[in-house]
Image (cartoon, rainbow, N blue to C red):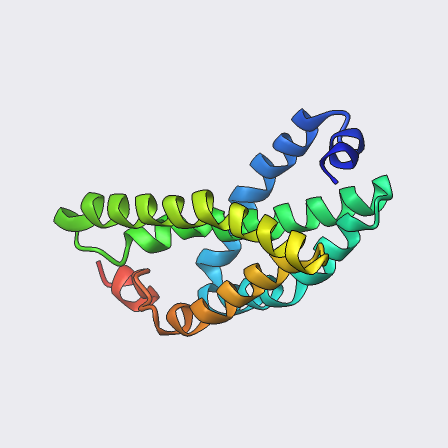
Length: 162
């Protein structure tokens, strides 16, 4: 699968440039419509991964590229607002500690153990879409958290009275 992805992206700098353009747009939309945007991204994170991993396993260069870019756009949308939204959940004096502990723990679990577990499950089941099920499962688990997060953006009324 990785060999096809490398062949499908002859100019990775173009993909990176698109992500740098995409990030600010996503940030703006998420600021203007936080709850609908978060619901949409969470829904896409539940619905798309299994299909995208199945497409990547098809072996055709176009399908691998389409699936990888689609997953990158969804992941980029989550990442574009994730750090800011997470930071805003902490008081200023506790922010760096809260972020450091959360980021370190998430990196250890999702960056260290999860790829190994995904490979074990793929090898054991013979199903290449297993990582998609894992991503969808995490998205389902965090959905209630996202829906319960408090809005931290100042209201229009408060900002216009100053």
